Structures are given as structure tokens and as C-alpha cells.
Amino acid sequence: MKLLFWVLVLALFFFVLGFKRGRPDRSTAPPAPSPSQRPVAAPAAEPPPEDMVSCAECGTHLPISESLPGRGGHFCCADHRVRFEARLG
Ligand SMILES: [Zn+2]
Image (cartoon, rainbow, N blue to C red; front, side, top):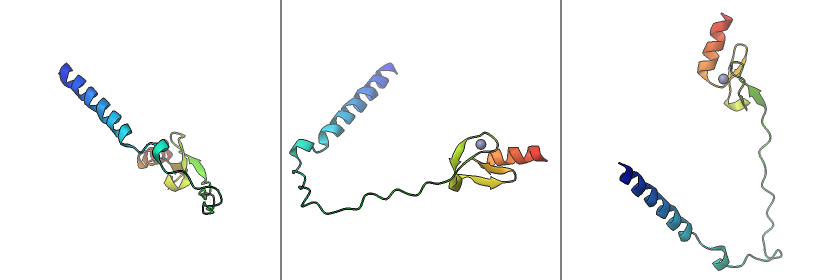
């Protein structure tokens, strides 16, 4: 069993090594166009910041779009919403 483990580790090692070598080298890539030739690209628009809420049960912070609204606030998962609302009665 130990041998199998080491064979797998070596296989993974050589796989990663081969993967890195397979990538195009920057030095052989064609030179980047000069600034005058480069098309003017607008800076990447960042998405607007999203409101963060914390789970009323465990306090985990998460984006409001990923939270579950419930009685007493927002929750990180349905399980916490059920637990919190069960305590409310
Ligand atoms: Zn939670």
C-alpha cells in the first residue's frame, strides 16, 4: 500500500512538471505591441460592491445575494435559519 502511495506521488509530480513545461514560455512569445499599437481598452470594470450581512445564527459574513432571509435577519444556510427560528418559537 505504501508503494502505491509513492507511485501516485511520483506520478503527480511528473504530471505537474510536464504541465509546466507544456506551457508557452514568455521569452519565446512574440513581443508585446508597443503602447501606440495597442488598442485602447477600457480598464476592467469592477462589479459594484455588494452589501454584506452576517448570519444571525453563526455570525458568518456573506454577500446579501447569497444569504437566506428569514425571521430575525439573514442566514448563511437553511439549517441555521431553521435553528434560529426554532429558538424564536
Ligand atoms: Zn450561519
